[in-house]
Image (cartoon, rainbow, N blue to C red; front, side, top):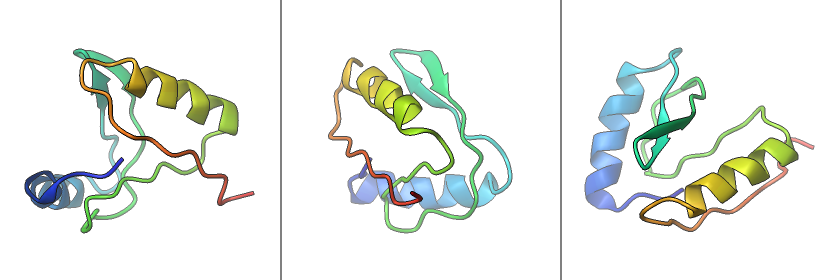
Length: 79
């Protein structure tokens, strides 16, 4: 997920405050995920590690089914 400059500015502050804590992912006011923030996100690009490809596909489908779809790319960078 990539945020615009205004969203990226808000995300860096929020993510810095949430290091070590879960960050909720909501679609249409429904919590669909809560990955733990491992570090501040300075560039507006979110990457979620530590989930299976199957779970990543489910999360992608949930994000795309939301009220405001966003481009989501799956990557198996961890093997």
